[in-house]
Image (cartoon, rainbow, N blue to C red):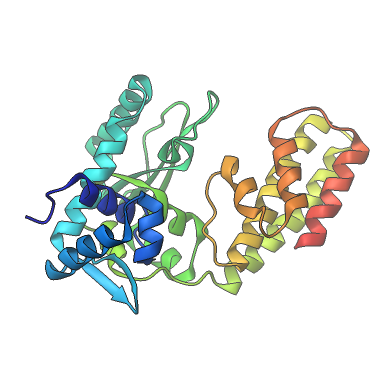
Length: 288
């Protein structure tokens, strides 16, 4: 049997939670807290069963193997079942209605709920791959609907939402469209994508200056978007897949501590003076 020990489950779960990442034996040993000697035996066994890809001395799951695809679905299902009862019911109710009403090819939970980082005010976010262009309305829910062609185009462009969905999303339903992409390496984030985000930040800057004259509360909301987009640009330039807004501050800390502090302050939603907001705007624009 491929799986016989709890230690093997821990290793496989880590691979599935990081489907595009290669791990050396020392890295995996530290990650799952298993001795290196035992890790060598586990990796050797998995290699014999043909479920690993190898790059020099590092490994990842080979998702062209049916076992690995089923394993990813199994661990995603386990995660979904572990959600708070009310959240779990909401997620499955919405997913079932999407499946019934538009017959999609894939339904994937994304955003803060997929990270188990949701707050009371958090919406439930889904990526849906389907040919229909109309989706049912659900309260406190965001649905990104893409055709298979659109999904592939964004994937090849290195769209950070698509890459984040592939890296961190939890699959609720799939006809082998979404999971098929795990067989390929992640594309490099394109300069075109980064330039689009820079232009968006410049528009946000203008909007914030305008709002400061009429609506400081709204200006502060837009300032948070600007700071988050700035952090995403920095992460993309360093080939790091951005996570949710609650984790981006921690992600960007190694590259820019001042920006990370700015994001954390803005997330607290404390009222800021106009002078402080202008300081934060200047910081963000300087970084991009």
